[in-house]
Length: 236
Image (cartoon, rainbow, N blue to C red; front, side, top):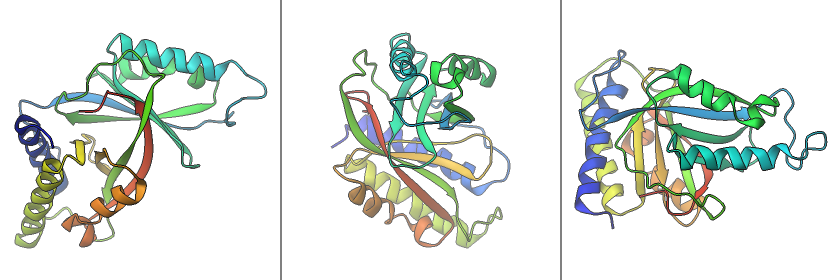
């Protein structure tokens, strides 16, 4: 069960997500939200799964670099995605500058070697992650990307407002259950609308919780869920 303050924070986040979902132009975020930069790591031109036959030490150097990002507090969270797709990891970086975030990510040995390439997005959230310096101890959470669904429309109507209200209520319900521990909107008004991070026992449980979202049921939003391996203790 999340503490009352965390639940309130989640509701504030969901309200800002609602503004982003409902408008074509980016809404001004609530004052308690902080802008971060999210780096999505995908297969690069020289991708091969570890151990890399031509660069056997790159993975080790990559893990060491991730630890320096976490220790320096440049990254508030960094994790790997291991479900066999082209998306292999994600960083959330403590900077408002896309250029600065790109510089930090480009210094990752796996990026420099061409094993992975980076897709950057501005992202807003409460500052809820816990600092950790022991990334070798990990746990599996579930990272869900909210995207525009088949029935997405930018228009604001009584029907979309009612659906958004139900969507926000469901976010609050999942937060009170202690299942949804991080949420926040992307700030670039693209196909990706926001993220959820579920702290649950299985992918099936995360999928079942995500399926309760009224906006997902209506087709206005869609969810793409991945197992997200992160340092133990970093999630709220």
